[in-house]
Length: 239
Image (tube, rainbow, N blue to C red; front, side, top):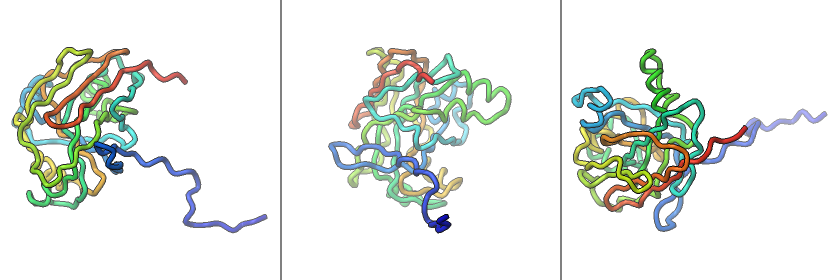
């Protein structure tokens, strides 16, 4: 019997690398982690029962939750309240801990439109019980994202229309200037909690108007000067 082993070999096939396309066929951006900011627009914070003066807080989604534009989100299990949340997404080309404002701004590779899909009923049950509520956020296909637009030396946006439509009907509409914590502040604060790294994505929060989607819905999301994000809500996956 051959007992020779290779200590550097994987014992199972490694999972595929999650990635996001860069616009105009300019390659793929590898995804390391997905961070999300909660309640970063005052009106949305109020509609969810929070205080618009609360400091930012964060949660994560798995990297393989990425759903590309044009894709189908199979209606997820265990929920009857799948909600949409349109967001500006930052992609990082550099990282570190305790970043300065300049370092935070210079860490950004590009921007994209994203949708943080949420199993709202499961989130509500977990919150009421005082339990972690990743079950409402960190599920398969829950991080929809459009192709990235590289910054190319331009400053991070401080304003610009952000909106989401379901079957052509506008559900969410706001402006990036309404963010309680701007892009640089979000990165700086997050870097105090985690050591950021190239490949990280940051979903920066959603304006008011979040609501349910059902099977067959076509969801379109837009932010000024960025590529549109469009996904369809499909039937649940069969076993």
